[in-house]
Image 1 (spheres, rainbow over the protein chains, first blue to last red):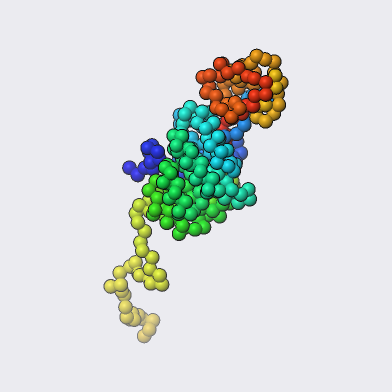
Image 2: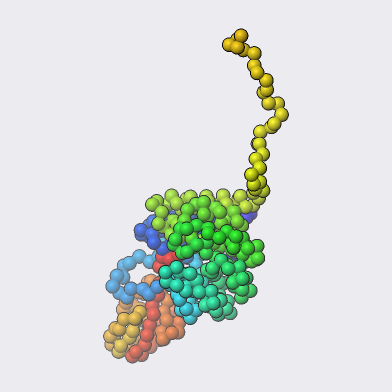
Length: 268
Length: 66
């Protein structure tokens, strides 16, 4: 069985799905179910205090008993804030140690601050967290994060929420070739072919949110993404044919062709 | 007694422990985590944690995110 193993746990789905930006929790849950995902990201925020006590809770809709929850540090711009957020998340989720670390460096591009990311990763790994880490597509930083002990390296394919697709497949390929822990493309996927391309490169998984949540029909896109990730994975496992540049090769036999001019009554 | 909860100043009559505060905020059946003055307070010790004037509390939940 082809499974994705992260921090010692096996998953049959290689699609990781974010839970932000959906219309409501019903749509969130439907997209999660149709996508077949087993790992979902959540954000950690201040609760409203008493204003709306009956407000539904995300964890009631997506219970930790059914999914692996991946609390993130979205919006954190320092290592200290990210570490603080994930320690609270661990308490919230009863000691659950698998987390998504991201430390941002720029409000416009949401590019990661890789220096602060490395610092936070060191603290978290030492503190017993299994860190899946969002980073740039720099192969050296990816290797350094692996050396620190991160459970998965998650390079961006393009900017968070941009849907610009896989902009630098070559860098991703280098990271995939060099890093031994799972490599998961996180951010930038816009449509099904982007997810398939990531998987065909040899990524171990794809994490996405906006591509599904901001599709005109999020549920249908969740279905498309499930198939794209599966198709890309199978294509990678199958091993694509070599590219032959400017060199056509017929698929049909060249022998036994019907040749010569036919005798026909019309010619006489 | 003044408390700062999620950045907002609130007045309470003391003495008050964290469990009582949680109930007062109708959060007793919610999945939450609490930090007091920068230190995480395990759920099991909420009743033992007597609040002091000026305490800063963060009460967090999981929300949708990517």
